Image (cartoon, rainbow, N blue to C red; front, side, top):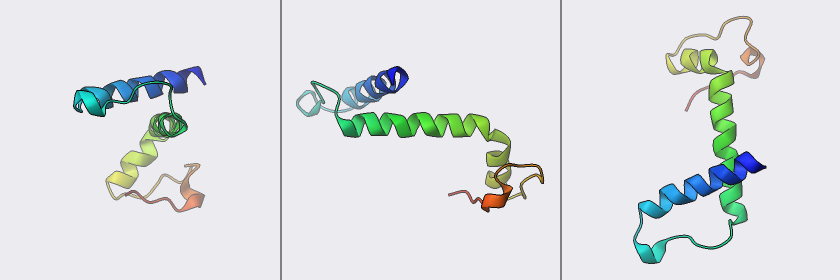
Length: 77
């Protein structure tokens, strides 16, 4: 939860520096911002844990036979 909150603040900061002063997000963190932060954290973890599989999928190669993802028939967007 703490990492999620920190990530949400970082995402808000990044968004706020790229918009006009009047359009900045202020106040308490919203549920949408917290959910967005959680999705970012999940993507980061997945890219670290499944790096080899992602590289295979990005390169159009077949997953290794010992991959935990092979039975899921994964694809890359």
